[in-house]
Amino acid sequence: MPYTVDFVNVSTVGLESSPVAPALAGLRANEARYFKNKYDHAFTVSPVGEVPDALAWVTRILKDERDLVIESPALEATEFEVDGIRMAYVFYESGLSINVMYTIEDAGKRAVGFKLSDGMEIPEELAPRFKFARQKSKLAGTIRGSFFVIKGEY
Image (cartoon, rainbow, N blue to C red; front, side, top):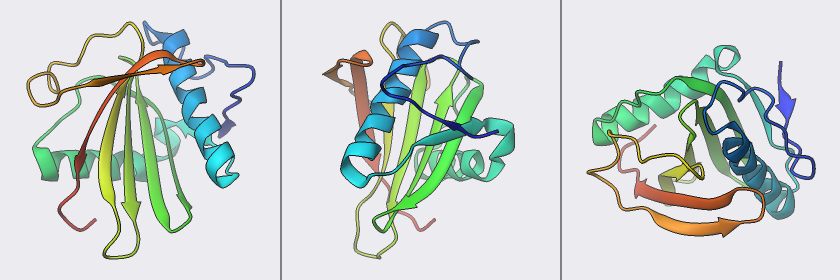
C-alpha cells in the first residue's frame, strides 16, 4: 500500500528493520520536502514487492552502467514522472538511498545518485568506486552523497 511521506512529522513506517531507521526516515522525508517544494509533488513510496518495476529499472541501470549489485535488501521504492523527468527511488535496509533521474528528452540530464543515511558505513560495493560529499539536513542530519552520469538508454 503506498505511503505518502510526511516531512513535518517524520515516521519510520516501512523502514523499521533498518539499523538506522530514524536517519533513513529523515533522508526519505528530506526527499519528500524537496519534491513538494520544487514541483508540488507528493512523494509516495511503496513496499518494494508492490513496485517491482521500479526496483528492476534501478537494478538494471546499476548493473549495466557500473556492474554494481547492491547487497542490502530493498525496503521501499517509488517511480514517478515530474517536469519531463522520470524519477525512481529505492530505499535499502542498510540506510542507502539510490535515485535515478532520467530526463525524457534525449539531450537531458541522466544520473544515478547515492545517499547514505547518518550513521551508516559506506557499503563495500560502493566504497572503492565513489567519493562521498557531506551535506547537512535538518531532517536527516548529515547526508553523504555521490552520483554518476548515465551513458546508456533506458
